[in-house]
Length: 330
Image (cartoon, rainbow, N blue to C red; front, side, top):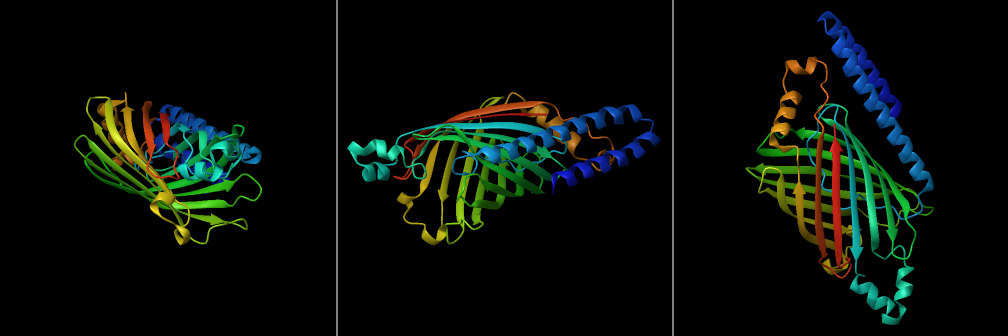
């Protein structure tokens, strides 16, 4: 959906809501709600403009989101800002062997092959409806021996197929398009399901993503594959401990051995000060037949963060990466 169409759609929904709310004597409530919706749409437009600007100045190789685990749930009207960052240590062993002990400086100049020293994702998500989610992401990184730059711009859509409430299964489908920001780099299209399984204090999330290069600059002969999965156990009211694993196969047609691919695994600590009570309250507002005809209430502000360590499992992976993620939604 184009941004202009999205803004037009939002304007029409506000106008339709006004007619219903006037008949019920709730015009004041409508005005306040309409103002909140207008503000969020304005933020959405501003973020898209910034993303376009980042696309114009990007100078590094595009990459998908850094150590991201996407949730399946969508809340209408919720606006979320998220930061994901990572710092990497250790050359892949295969690169050390190619460069030689006395030629490590030459390895630093291999921008396309070297691991990242640091990487940062800045993402905005907006719940367009009860099922549809729009996202835009700016990725900035500093490869070894290079300057810090914006490296990619991604636009994405997510559709929630099965809505999970408490224990049970949640299922969604996501698509994303990443723009190549440097001459000669291909664009990349990604798609795949998001699966959640919750039971008691345990939540398992799976993010398999199939990728395909697009445009005249494509270099792979077939589909690629990326994945991330997380098992999180809440051991206290606001705290959780989990395990995460990430990996990538650049080209199924030339996958090579497991040791030639990028795979990492490690522990993560989670902090969610919102708590279950806030989430339950939000779900109560989100669901319900008659409530769909009422003015959209502003979701409660929520904050969460997690920090973890990823250990490389193959010769093609950095030895260690320290990752951090923080999100604010309202």
